[in-house]
Image 1 (cartoon, rainbow, N blue to C red):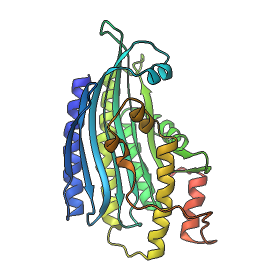
Image 2: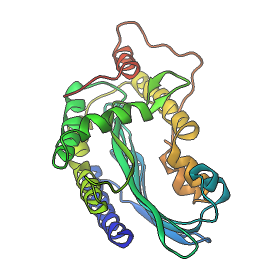
Image 3: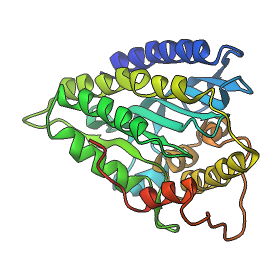
Image 4: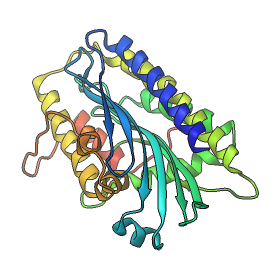
Amino acid sequence: MKDKFYAYIQTLQDTITSKLEEVDGAVKFQEDIWERPEGGGGRTRVIENGAVFEKGGVNISGVHGALPESMQKYFGVKDADFFACGLSLVLHPKNPMVPTVHANWRYFEMYDKEGTIVDQWFGGGQDLTPYYLFEEDAVHFHSTCKKACDAHNPEFYSKYKKRCDEYFWNTHRDEGRGLGGLFFDYCKATDEMQMQDWYNFVTKVGDSFLEAYVPIVIKNKEKAYTPEQRTWQEIRRGRYVEFNLVHDKGTLFGLKTNGRIESILMSLPPNVQWVYDHQPEKGSEEEKLLAVLKNPKDWI
C-alpha cells in the first residue's frame, strides 16, 4: 500500500504542478530534492512571484525510521517505527479576489520491532480560504468535494465537511481559517471500508482538486483590486499564519519528527500584516466575509 500510494502522489504532483504552471503563464515551479538523515526524503516544488501565484508549494515526501519519543507519547506507544508519505500543497495568489487553497493527502504506517504493521491509516482533505466572498465559488468548491465523496459514501461529505469546519478553527480568534471543504484523518480498515477502499476514496479526492480550484482562479485572476483590498488580504494572511503555527497538526508533526523546515514552512505567505485590533467597516465586503468565518454555513 505504501509503495502504491507514494507512486500515486508522485504522479499527482506532476499533474497539479503542470496545470498550475499553465494557469500562471509566467513562471515555473522550482524543484528541490531532499533527503532526511533518519530515513526517506522528498521532492519540494515551489512557485514564486508569478503572474497569478505570489507563492505556492506542491510537495511530496516519504519518511521512515524510529518514531521520535515525542510522537511515541502522542500515539501511546513505545519503540515503534513508522513510515509516512503524503502530498501537501498551499497556493497564495497575488490577487486578493482569488482565494488561497490548501490540500493534503497522506498515508501512515506504524511497525513493531519485528517490522510487522501494527497500525495504518489515511488522512487528508482540501479547503478554501478566500479574502473576498463570492458565494458561487464556495458552492463550486464544495460541490466538487461532495461529488468526490458521493462516489464512495453519501454520508462522507457532510461528515468530513463538518470535521473541516471544526479543525480549521482559530480558537484564539473564534473564527474559521476559511470556508472549509473536507478533512478526514485516521481512516483505518473496518468491516465497511478496507484499506483499498480508503485508498480509492483518498485518490478520488486528490484527483478532484484541480476541478475544484482552477475554475475559481481563472474566473477571478484578472479582477481589479485596490491597495486597501491588498492590505486586507495581508491581514487575513496573518490569521492563516497563526493557525498553521499554533494549531496545525501537520506542521507540528513535521517539526517534532525532524522534518525539513523549508518544506514545513512552505505554507506561509510571503507578505503578511498584523494590524492592531483591526476591524472592518460596518456593511463592507470584508465584514461580510468575517460573518461567514465566524458562523460556518452549508454551501450545498
